[in-house]
Image (cartoon, rainbow, N blue to C red; front, side, top):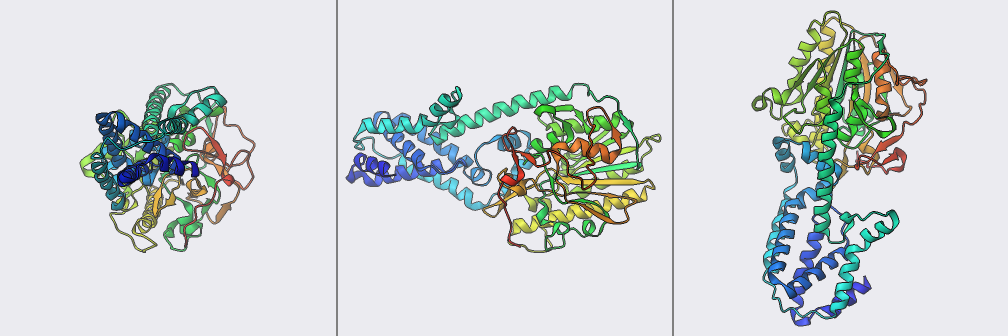
Length: 519
C-alpha cells in the first residue's frame, strides 16, 4: 500500500488532483462491480492504465471506459448478489427461461440498481477529463500496470505449465475472459450431456423385490433444513412432516450447491467422477418393471433445457407443467401439479408397480415469487419470511400427495429431499458453495405402513443416491452392490464429500464454515 501511495503521489499533478480522484473512484467502483473481492492493487492498476490511455489516445480512452462502465452497470446488481460469473452463475443463465430471469432480476434490491445508475453518471464525469493530465514517472507506471496485470497468469504458467489469462489483474477484462470461458464450458457440457442421454443405459442383471405398489419421489428445491420445524426451527412451518411417522435423515448432504450440479450427480451414476446420465434412476426403474412418471414444475421449454429435464423425458410419461400451457402455468405454485399427480396415482398400469417422480419449484429464489408475496409469520425480513412460507407450502403439498396416495387404495412410500440449500448473504438467500448450509438439506421417507418415527443420524451423501434409491425401491442391479444398509443408522463409507461450484472440486462438509441464521 505504501508503494501505491508513493506512486500515486509521484504521478498526480496537484492542480488536477480532483480529476485524478474522480478517475480513481471510477476505477475502484468498476473493480468492485463484477462480484470479485475488491483488490485495491487491481483498482490502481486500472487507474494507471486508463491514465496512460487517456494521455496517448483520447478516443480509445472513451471507448474503453464506456465499455467498462456499461459492463459494470449491467453486472453490478447481479455481482453483488451472485458473485463473479462462475460456473453456476453461467449455468443458471444458460438454462433459465426468460420468465425466471425476469423474476430473479426483479428480486434484487433496488439499491443495487441505483449503483448501476451511479456508474453511468460517474462515467459522464470521467469522459470529460482533459487529455493533458500531467503524468510523471511513466516507466514506473508501466511497470506497475504490467506486473499487476500479468503476475497471477505468469505465476500459474510457471507452476502448472499452462497460461490462463482468466487471472489477469484488470478486473473488467478478467470478467469477460471468465464469462467467455465458463460459457464455452457450459455450452460444451450441454452438448456432452445431450449426447450421453441419447445413449442406451447399461444397467445389467436388474431385478426387483418390492414392498409397496407405488413409490413417490419428491425433489424439493433450494431448501436448507435448519429453517424447517421438523429439523429444529422454532416456527412450525412443517406440521405434516413434524407429525408424521417415517424415516428421517438428520445428516443428508446434497451432492452440489446448485440444481444442475447436484441432481446430475444424484440421479445418475458417476463412477470415477465420469457422469453416466443414461444410467439414471428412471431407466433403472423402467428396466426393473416399473411404469414411470416425471411430473415437473421446472420447465422443459426447448433446446437448452437442463440435463435434469433430459432424464425426466426418459420416463414412460413425462409432464412439464410450464410447457403444457405456459400462459396458464407461468409462475404456478407447486399445488398446480396435484391434478396430474392424482391422475398418475389412480391410473392403471396393467399391474406394473409405479414410480412417480415430482420435481418442485419449491423455495427457488426469489422466494416471494413462490408465495405470491404472502407469508404467515414475519421473520427478520420479507425475503426470509417468504422463504419460510415456501417451505410450509411444500409441507402442505406433501400432505396432499400422501392423502391422494392413501385414497388410491394402493400401498405406497414417499421420499422427499431437496436438491441443495442456500446461503444468507447481505440479507439475501443465494446459491453458494462456501457454507455447510448450502449442502445440509432435508431427506425423509414416509410410507403407508409406518407406525413410528425413526431417525438416521449417520451421514448420507447424495453422491451415493443410486444405492439409497435402489434399497428404498427394492431394486438389485450390477454396479449397485453394497454391504451397507443406507436405510439404517449404519455408518457407510464416503458420505461426507460435496462438490463445489466448479463442478469438479470435492470437499469434506466439515471443512466448510457454518452460515447460521439468528433464530
